[in-house]
Image 1 (cartoon, rainbow, N blue to C red):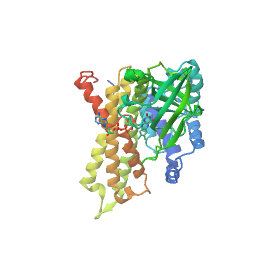
Image 2 (cartoon, rainbow, N blue to C red):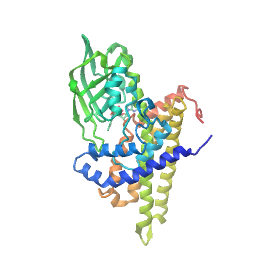
Image 3 (cartoon, helix red, strand yellow):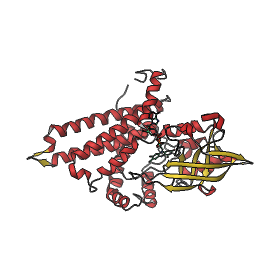
Length: 387
Ligand SMILES: Cc1cc2nc3c(=O)[nH]c(=O)nc-3n(C[C@H](O)[C@H](O)[C@H](O)COP(=O)(O)OP(=O)(O)OC[C@H]3O[C@@H](n4cnc5c(N)ncnc54)[C@H](O)[C@@H]3O)c2cc1C
């Protein structure tokens, strides 16, 4: 067993770190100013400019298969990249990627949706959650009724990431009510087929949307995958993002803890730096231990997937622990900064608001615990199975 990064992984980590420090961190004040004025953190043009710069440095399509022009670096690299990128809150993503389930499209769908998404010409979103069906995905009510060669979709989706900007949505609807989870289908639906989006104000800057479908007619050829095969596609979409949440939390927490380490050595009270106080030292120590533990969980989830093994149990662990670690660390870092931590002069409050989301989307804490305990109680996974 090798518990260190390879030379290649270290090189990628270093290059991305430099990109984040040189290109993204200098934008942080602008991002804060824009967001506080109710505008996107960075404009679409700026994002494109940054993505083009990253592309020149070889970072494009990080996880996209080579046949689609991607670098296909694998999950371990994805984890390392996500950790580095999350050391800033600048809302940047590398170009050249598409949702994992779009690869299930037929040749025509790949031409119309997958390739334009990879090339940045089209934006996608994925919609499973409804006002009455979040954790309980079996309660989905959106209907799709066949009418000639078309399906007619009615219902509402909620909290859809990217739903305000998307050109098309991959939406899950009930096609056979009697069949439960074997009676739902995933449809690719262009915005100009008639669905509407409404911005949802949240405590963070994520800005999800409600999507309204009122007799939206979708041609039969826009079914993604198999008729009635939507449930598994949904799980696959959610599963892909799940452990990455842990990676994001690790990156943010490392940056935040460094801020606390620096500040605690500068800030003096009662004649001494607060870093000399055990109360502060313990917060630093606990945070460092939790970050390290979360990092190993994330890397194990990534390694397991790269190895072609089922990583769902580890993905839930990495998400649950990572999200909670991130919340613990940002709270301690805010505490170490005292009143300054609570101001909008520093970005800690922004991270504090964003971190709260990590415990909710892509399966809440409670749902991750349910999955982990069920796997163990039913014997799907044995303790100590992975190492
Ligand atoms: C900013 C944001 C972005 C999102 N992006 C997307 C997206 O792109 N696409 C998409 O489809 N969805 C998206 N979601 C939806 C997200 O996945 C759901 O909000 C989440 O799964 C929880 O569902 P819910 O909000 O309906 O809560 P509920 O399911 O109603 O849960 C309420 C509470 O009860 C708990 N609970 C529920 N069931 C159980 C149980 N069996 N045992 C114990 N406790 C339980 C939950 O953990 C939670 O604490 C997003 C959400 C947010 C906030």
